[in-house]
Amino acid sequence: MTLAQGLSLKGHKVLVLDCDPQGSLTTLFGILPDTEVDESQTILPVCLGQESSITPSIQNTYWSGLDLVCAAPLLFAAEFGLPARQMRETDFEFWNVLNQALDDVRDLYDVIIIDTPPALSYVTINALMASDGILMPLPPNALDAASAAQFWRLFSDLAGQLVEQRGVTKNFDFVRVLFTRVDSQDSTTATIRDWISKTYEGKVLPAEIPKTTVASSSSAEFGTVYDVAKYEGSQKTYKRARDAYERVSELMEEIIRATWRRQLSNQG
Image 1 (cartoon, rainbow, N blue to C red):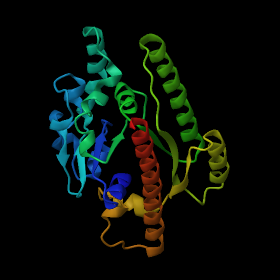
Image 2 (cartoon, rainbow, N blue to C red; image 1 turned 180 degrees about the vertical axis):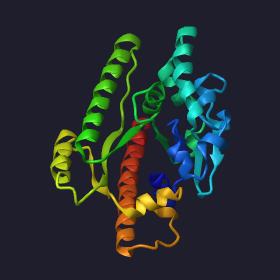
Image 3 (cartoon, rainbow, N blue to C red; image 1 turned 120 degrees about the horizontal axis):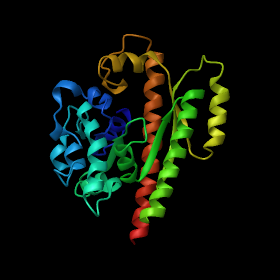
């Protein structure tokens, strides 16, 4: 959410796809997934073959320059619908549904951000195959680091199977890891941060999101640091949090612009 807001503040038109049935991203837009979202506002019609384009699911938001495709618990149906279509339709490519559905809106936005479920599901695979790059938020603690490593192993195995069985290839313009919820008071943080940096050498962003009361209090009010009109706590804490998010937006904009230049060069 903050990345989308940060990029929009730099003048970019952004589309955000919430693909996590939990709908946390949708909630941050002030929309309650359980009661205020129906199927037509999500990627589910595309997954079930009822729509071929994501366009009917896109809606405007309170934030200028930022459009949204919602998520809700009903999106769990995609995890059954996609494999069912694979069994039923001879030439169906379950991993390519979202990629194709985005084709007619790519030129309408500068950046499309897809928020995935925290697991390697059919929807997550679709999100990855539709993306030019990956940004993985990763708290520097042992459990999250182990989960991330397991995710990449599973994804690598799956990608290998697709290549062998279907001849599918996928290249990402960038893969980056972002340290989040960094607790400077935790004595193990520095050690685990160093270990992760060596594991993902060259892929860790030179910025990190600190664990602050600003982020937790603003999310409790269904917003982000960018939504805070007046912070009642320490201004130093607020500035540290806001500066961190803005730095990440700057770095990601640089990476995205580099991707655009490479794509234009390849087209030329």
